[in-house]
Amino acid sequence: MVGVAAKMGSSETRSCSCGYAFDLMEESSINKGCGICGGPQTLAYKGSISSADAAAMAPSAHQSGLYGDLFRCADCGTIAQPSLPGGDSLHSLYRDMTDTAYLAEEEGRRLTALRLIDLIGKYVPAGRLLDVGCGHGLLLDEARRRGYQATGLELSSANAGYARDVLGLDVREVGLEDFNDADGFDVVVLADVIEHLDDPVSAIDHCKNLLAPGGVLCIVTPDPSARIARLAGGRWWGFVPAHTFLMPRVTLHEILSGTGLICS
Ligand SMILES: [Zn+2]
Image (cartoon, rainbow, N blue to C red):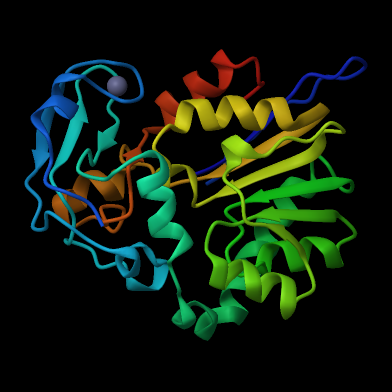
């Protein structure tokens, strides 16, 4: 699922299009209700693991069918993996993550990034672009070639080091919640990131605050309400050890709209 949401500017309004190591689960985390809307949760898929380490977080290491217990919210349909930690514990896993296999498919990953930049360019063809969870910096590198002023956030020291030292990009090793910018970004990208966060709703709100008037937020995330996901059941590729919350398209749009962003 790919979505672009826009922040209303003082002089213009943009429309939007959409195309496209943890511990055993604690009973208390289930009783607290859905981490997105607070609704009641029930076990959707029994998991096969109860713990994982930084290696399990790497995109290239994801294996379908390998995850902790997955719960579905009866109200908003979000699928949660509450056995994952939050806060500093979750950050630590990503700081220690390395993914050398990721660049083996660099050409294809750059093409995917270019398609996303083409979509973004229909709304904002130039300006300041922030890629949250930028990994090795491939999307940032392509955005820079298109003329964007590119900045990235990346917790993994190995990934951020590659982006800075090899590609010469401006990449900061800070979490989104700890990053602020006074000037505002014309584009904020959350590509395959929001499903890894412990508080996606706060993250979206923070991204909105980072946007300049008229700026756009682009989100790419697996959609558990998609037909292919429903057909695949527990074998769906979106169910992996690193995914905290998988939000249906409708739920994500409600959250975006609730922040004041314009989305369709
Ligand atoms: Zn919910």
